[in-house]
Length: 400
Ligand SMILES: C[S@@+](CC[C@H](N)C(=O)[O-])C[C@H]1O[C@@H](n2cnc3c(N)ncnc32)[C@H](O)[C@@H]1O
Image 1: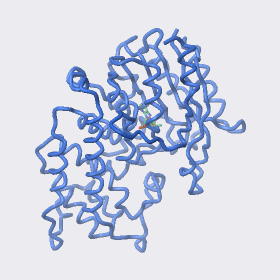
Image 2 (image 1 turned 90 degrees about the horizontal axis):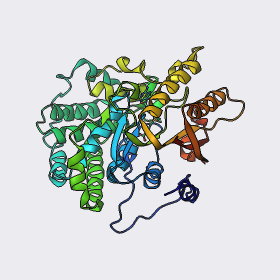
Image 3 (image 1 turned 135 degrees about the vertical axis):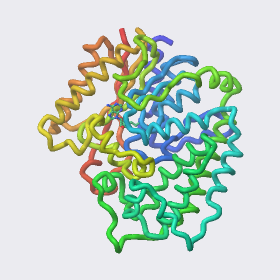
């Protein structure tokens, strides 16, 4: 397809995706990762899905250097493009790795669903399951009502004693995802990032096993449904690509992806001073027995550094360093799609973003498409400062 045809197709899309799409029948459609894990600022799956369909062919290599929970990765996989994803946050990469594992055509997903559902059985409310918890998991107690936490601790116990790797990974994703909804502090990620625990009179008993079962069925039924929609060629494709590491818990700069091997990059980097991705996953870090302090310093653009004088300069330097590597790994003629914030003129961050866009051109990439989109309004229903961004811009460049 030549660039004028590509532009015509890109222009025909309503990038707001503010309408309901009925995919119907057996047709393959985007797989919505964020239905199974609530993570800040994830892609609407239609965005990478449309870009992959228009800008690549089956068998091409697609990379997301800020891959999050794997929205680009999973659409690439579904569309039989060879996927790579990088992210410094182990909670996000865990979601991506688990979904990748669940797409394996050789595993029996119905059996996995039943095994997962059985794990709720055997709870004895007279027993205290919290006694054997690690120090990190004990720290979680302040976020939950007492009997809710005992039930969660029972599930942790079951999780620790699992033998099957796939079942254990899926249970990890599900527990990690329901910790926030079961907590009595569910006003949003920013409260968790700032370690604002619920007050004593806010503690509420929550239905742990119901929530666990709903989330398990929700995920497993959708994975099973999606597997039926994949073409028969997917079986050989998956077995061909699944031997090499594809998901890196690292910055792109420190990954072994070689020069000029990638056909298409699709990404949305962290925006400056807006979100604390690592701290927002505080509850999951405790469940994983990981210390988030080991990860916060590696995060680009974190909100908690907003009062530092050099925070925008270091953000720009970090992003430009990764951009250099993006342009290095792209094949000549390959496309680079990036979604960036569209700040209004008075915002200091606008100049930084403008320079980052100029930097792509300096790195030898030509702009082939640009369009604005608005961020759906549900994110702004609470009057929270960080959520005031209204618009984003999608840019598509081609490496010369
Ligand atoms: C806007 S989110 C991407 C979400 C992703 N598009 C999705 O749909 O899940 C930005 C991501 O960049 C990650 N990140 C921050 N600094 C990074 C770095 N230096 N290298 C790689 N990833 C980083 C954050 O952990 C976060 O997951």
